[in-house]
Image 1 (spheres, helix red, strand yellow):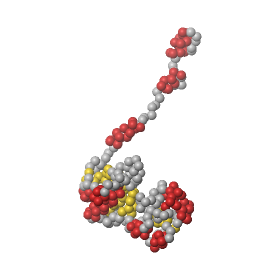
Image 2: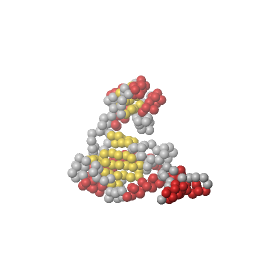
Image 3: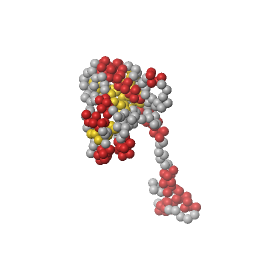
Image 4: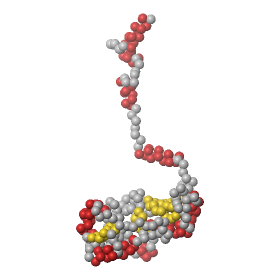
Length: 293
């Protein structure tokens, strides 16, 4: 027994010469030894690429359960009937219309105002600030504008003393206010501009046009959402509201063809923003793509 233990001690303790190399390799290697650590360094975890992550997300989306209406298109009247049946216990529920547009690089986010043939709710009242002087300022006051003044209002807008949901300006003052207000109102989409029609000499006419209207605007992805009707509305009223709103969006995005305008050659005409999908949904109902939008 003592001879066996002595031999075992020789094998497990390295010594000089050839025997030391053999006995060192035959000893048990623990998790912190140099050999094990070297093996771990070789097995480095490689982070997945963006393409691999996207492929994984697509596989996960395919396995997820989808609505029976996800890949089905319906006519507008059929979609209204389906959602009405789903919301039979909620007559005050609202139809929501979603219009998805294709925004390419350099395309502005679609925006506009509308007044439905049958409103779903009372339109909100805008607080209007007008940069105008002289007769234009008097006309704006008579039209019921909340704040009217010249360039002296700029500092109040920057400090937050003068707050409004809409800013209008006459053409003779736009250059005076742009250097200071462009960086303040521009990111919020409130800076007066000729393209939006908020730089105008006819302030009173513009304000008359605003009364009884609501604003619609797409998000950064080009998706437009709007409450379009109530469930208890008759079907013809719902269809009329949807057709009207789609016409407004198509006109703003350049998809509504005008025969008179198309006959004139306009080199500066901007390309149309394509409408990719029109979906009608409700609070508890599915989103149904409209085939005859």
